[in-house]
Length: 344
Length: 248
Image 1 (cartoon, each protein chain N blue to C red):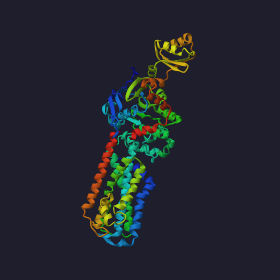
Image 2: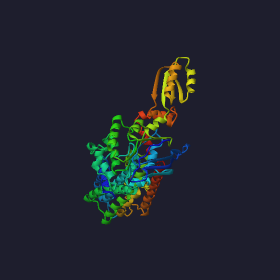
Image 3: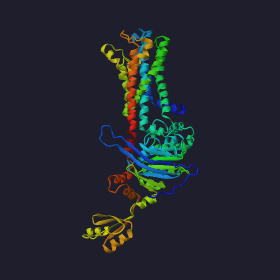
Image 4: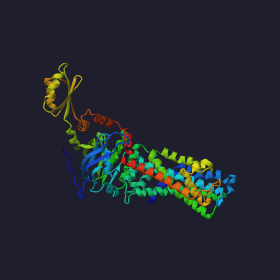
């Protein structure tokens, strides 16, 4: 599997994140006969300073658990996690890493500024409170109670809190879960505006567009393992080429399908009513065959999108989990399931 | 100790007007009704009078209402994600607990001061030693109920449950010989309930163990009651926190 060229940080030789054989399992619920749950099942990963990396995967893929171990919020069952060559908790205490977590977890009866002041007071050295509030676009909301802020505004507040130690590594766990389209765009605009040179950013998401638009590198996670790792373009190309579809004359369908299956570079042939859908590396050859020899009409050629690549790599496309992802990618309102997972 | 953090926490508590009313004003009001204005208020008990006896009882009730709710809300906050937010900062768990304990004690001191001040103004009488020691015992003993709040907050994970736990203090106060003097079988039963030992201990410098019905408790009885309930609450809280941690 190919990986991105990695920028090297001159100041420090240690990678921003280094995970070795990382495993986290949870005991089964008391009294249940289920086996233990392996949320993270052997992850090896190295992220260099300056990279912007997306952890992409369906709900329950192990993204949050992996990031929790990077942040020292959870101890691995086995394996190690290091941040800039240190134990995660040391990196947090030193202000080298901070994070924007999922929804929940702010004190509703404080104002925005009070929340920033409170968290700021836990650091020996931190950026000025008002500067951080400005950078997160919260100046007008500074005196508003957290309980009166929208989900997007609360997320910008978490972002302000994460900026306080001026961290070298910023972790964002599903930062836009539960936001509407406008709020999501606003959040990423704020992020882009702040993307100061050299800050390493790692974010978890199940929105393909977000991974595509913001990350240089995508780490695809499913079932607690890394299933693909590369640039957006590389991930896309790993999906099998293009899809060619055409309507075939009635009666000849079965025969044509059999014929198409023998063509070199054809990955999959599927019948959909009177149409046939062919996934192939060499789409031109398939198109020629369909039009010239098999009597096909209404021909369409489609390049596999990232979504399809995602489905190919995390399952076989009809896998319930993969289709679940495609649905989740369109549904922003599933943040509650994450919260339940956290509170558990 | 982090002054900014502690002061902001204090500000949150003073913003909760309803909470402050039940914690601070209600016990003082109860004292005026059940202590300062009753016919028997000047009757002698121990080295003082009945007004003083009621005053200490009500102060104790106010103090435990405060510590139960602060302990409980701390547990709920931490589980609702604030614990994870704090986990991303250099703040150590021990400093957090120390700050919350300081806040709980400060807030518990409010009903004690208010009720004692009213008592002094309305004819509560007792030895100087009884005034000082009772106030201190009210304050220190209320910490046991911070653990009770922590237990309820950890078990039920909702602010409503913590509110209910604070409310159950009314029931414990009736059962524990705090609000009205009990006698007979009810009094015998009361000695096993959580508030009995704490309130009896807080009143001990005044009563020397004498009860309104004329009987007398040995000193070890309230002490054993307090220690037993501390052990029960503490063990249950530790078990629950440990179970929660396994699942994180």
